[in-house]
Image 1 (tube, rainbow, N blue to C red):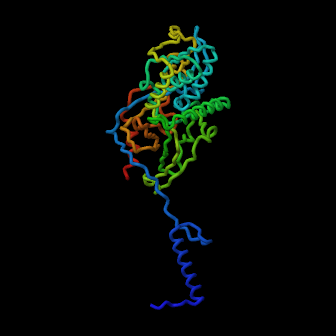
Image 2 (image 1 turned 180 degrees about the vertical axis):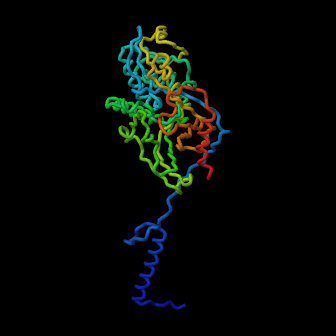
Image 3 (image 1 turned 60 degrees about the vertical axis):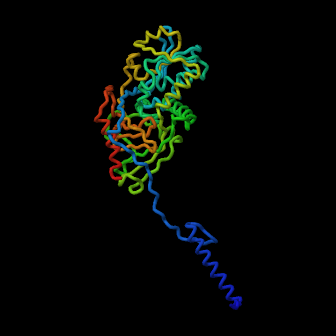
Length: 402
């Protein structure tokens, strides 16, 4: 076939046509990009739906129901020093629902006061969250430490906590949140929070972050708040005022963008303790550092006279009500329904006054009510099966439409 020769005008028109076609192909292949000054119309894609692994929540999967009594004091934790006979007692109890959350910061204060007595052989009474952290911090300060306790984890009250980082949960009443107390509390929070960061990623995940979803049927109620008509004294709400920099920004999801139908979600990133692994880690570290643990029961402070140590840290929690006759301690009942773990669940939920947490040592369901007065002044420790089933069925109801 004989080659055709193009005129100069035809060659120019051909180049323009090819250039235009190439640009069109490039624009079609790169959605939303600007090429050579061209501004193609961006395609608006539908919002990506939130994907959550389905939870297998049913009452037949409940493995255990546990009850604890949290030690609330209207004025906040007791951290003073008391002389009883020949013994110096440093108190470290009364943290309400914030024992694990504040343990390192609170125990740091107690240890400083105990070491100021000049002794290097110190006893700790109690082997829960505050006792173990007190013992470890005493060791780091150079003391020889023995923990005396009636029970050891997992048979202590703090082992029955929910496991969520809640540093101002029933920490005190609002009227007692003075500027001095707020500063003390903020210091405890920050020291504890910094310590927890060093425990992330360890075997067994003793501490980890999870996404926690507040679920509501009403877009105007995306936060757990007490009724405006409630005339009872308010509990201190300190997080938003004093440690906002430690709290990641929340994110909202409307109907159609998540698996739970026409409801509204608010996502927060929260810290969680897998208490079984965490308590074992603390005990192992304490013993590895030369610490001793002795089983002992004390009925009155006079029983401390038989101990060889002259300085003691009292970390007996709710037990201090009977041991020291401290009537300022008010019991707050908390019940957990424990369920078979589910490895693909890594998020928590709060819906209709029920909390769910994906702990590795057993999924946790708890009725917590609409305000902090749920379980207030209730010292009963008998498990309530109906309450446990209500907690599980409330969360399970979110998945019925799936």
